[in-house]
Length: 326
Image (cartoon, rainbow, N blue to C red; front, side, top):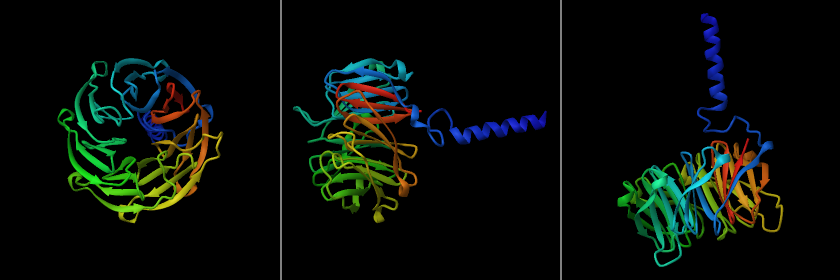
C-alpha cells in the first residue's frame, strides 16, 4: 500500500510540473493546430481594447462593455456603461478607462466589484491620454508629451503623483519596477521605484517607430510591434541601464494591411494582431523567436488582444471574438 501511495504522489507531482495548476498557464509545448473561434459578440461601433480578469472581459469603444466569459463559449454582455474609451486596464476591483477625445479627456475609474453593478467612481483629467498600464497600486498613462503616474489606491481617491516629460509619448508597458514607454527617440526605460521619483535610465533607439506601433513587457524583456512595418523587436531590459535590442522577428504578410499593431504576452508567447490575422510567436529563447501559428478572425480589423487560461480575446471593429488556443 505504501509503495502504491508513493507512486501516485509522484504521478500527481509530475502532472503539476508539466501542466501547471488551475488552468492558468499553457502546456509545456502548446499545440496550436486546433485553434478555433468559439464565440463572437457584436458590439456597436466595435471595440478598441480589451482586458480580461476573473471570468470577465472588459471591452471599450463607444461604450464600456462587461462580458461574462465563464465559460468562454457562452460569453454574454452583462453590463454596459455609456462612457467612451480608447484603452482599458483592470486591477483588483477597478477598471481604468482612458479616452483622448471629447470635452474631458483622461482617466475614468470604474468600480467593477461586482461587475453587474459597475459604476464610475473617479475621473482624472489627462490631456491627450493615449495608453495605460496598471501595476502595484499605480496607473501609468501616456498623454501629451508626458508620462503621468497616478496613485490609485484606493481607486476612488486617485490623483496624479508624478509627470515626466516625454516627447511624443505613445504607448506604455510595465516590467518589474520599470516602465517601458515608446516615445520620441525610441523605447525609454524608466525607473519607477519609487514612482514619485521616476526617471529615464536608458533609451533604446528604434528606427521607424510610428503611431501604429505598440509595446508589451514581461520577464525582463520588452516587445515592440512596428505596425505596418511587419516586425516585432525584442529588447532585453534587465538590467535597465544596459537595455538593448536582441532580436527582430519579421512576419510574412497575408494581405496589404497586415502587420504588428497590438501585442499580448503569455507564457513565453507573443500574440500579435494585424489586419484580420492573430499570430503567435514563440519568444523563448529570444534568439530563436519565430512565428509558430496564426488564425484568421472574421473581422475587418483587429484592435487589441488579451490572453488568459488558454483563450485569446480579440477586440475588433465589429466587436469581440474569443479563440480557443489549444
